[in-house]
Length: 141
Image 1: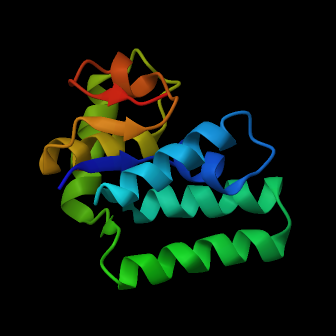
Image 2: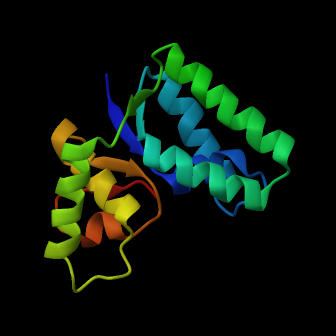
C-alpha cells in the first residue's frame, strides 16, 4: 500500500471549502483512500492544522474535521507519527544545516525527518520547501 505524507497544507485544503485547492486536494484524498493509500502525518502537522483551521473556518467545522481525523487515526487508517526527543533533535540539526533557508519552518524540518525515516518521498503539499531542501521529496501540488 502506498504511503504519502500529508502536510498541513493538504489537510487545510481538504477541510477548507474556500481554499483555492480544495476541489483538487479533496479529489486526490478520496481517490487515494479508494486505492487503499495510507496517509502519514504527525502531531506537529495536526497542531499546525488545528491552528490554521480555527483561523480560517468556523469552530464547529474545524472541530468536526479534526475529530474525524482523530477517529481515523484510532482506526489505523492514518499513520500518526509523534515528534519525540530523538526526532526533535534531528530536526534541530537539519535546521542548523540549512541555516541559509530561515524561511523553512521547524514544523517542516520535523516532517522531513519523519519522511526520511519512513522512506516516504511524496507529500500532499504545495509547499516548495519539500523539493527545495534537496532530500528527494516531491510535492503533489
